[in-house]
Amino acid sequence: MGTEANREHLGTSDEAGLGGQVRSAVGLLYRRFRSERPEGTLGDTALDVLTWLHKHGPRTLTELSEDAHVAPASMSQSVNRLTSAGYAVRTPDPKDRRKVLIGTTPEGAELALATRARRNTWLDEQLHALSPDDQRAIARACELLRDIAGA
Amino acid sequence: MGTEANREHLGTSDEAGLGGQVRSAVGLLYRRFRSERPEGTLGDTALDVLTWLHKHGPRTLTELSEDAHVAPASMSQSVNRLTSAGYAVRTPDPKDRRKVLIGTTPEGAELALATRARRNTWLDEQLHALSPDDQRAIARACELLRDIAGA
DNA sequence: CACCGATCCTTAGTATACCTAAGCACCCTG
DNA sequence: CAGGGTGCTTAGGTATACTAAGGATCGGTG
Image (cartoon, rainbow over all chains, first blue to last red; front, side):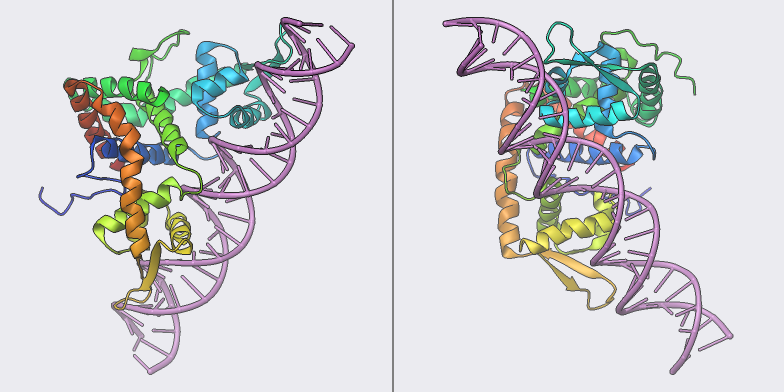
């Protein structure tokens, strides 16, 4: 098997610390995920929001923006995309009319499920091919890194 | 393939997909890294390219775009940002004048080093606070995921 | 040698996603 | 009910990515 195949990728930094490795892996994966996105679909973030809403029920905009670690204004735009595509609705909170509750429409719920299944197929296949130990390492790493990202 | 098991209960879906966890962790980290970027700096990708060039020497545009898994046109733009900021130069390849070799300027090299150090400080600190086992898990996960991203 | 397809790069136009700044609407308290 | 704080939105700007289209150069073939 010894062809030249040991290709490095942009962002790979062998001699850098663990931080560099994490950073490069994240960048690579992010771009890869982005390119996996089928055409004519909602963006990455919008879909994440939809999935989140589907899973956790209606949320205010501020809550969503905090969950995703983006500014409220950014989240507002993402929600705009969802609502104008008919996948989410804004409802004024009856108890505090400054707030707006964002929830999925039936179409949105369906899309969330469908997309999620399709979206993770490739990735899950790759992951299932790994040893149980490696899978555990990845699960653990996700947990830890999610904490770090949220810190 | 069936994906029969994707029935969702509001709440946690940890065993519903390692893929989903990876995806969400990556998204969170990516945004976090992005927000760490000091203002008035080059973008993430541009900086990655600069670091890459600094480490591996001049490359053609196509090579760069393949390494980063982006279209050549996208890479051309990123390189534009670098060149117009004075951190990289384009040199026609003497052997094949269709090609253009991209290399760093001295300023670019310096920036690559400086940025790299500064950039990973926060992340390295977080990672150092983890147990050795956890650090190993993350290192392993990066390795595996990098392979998957490049596949 | 002249032509032609393939290759490399660039520019143009479009879309997503993020930010800050600014402003409106609403709530609560004094 | 006036003022200050909170929640959301819009406006304007940057970075990154894509596709489409065009210019330049190379290599092979008649």
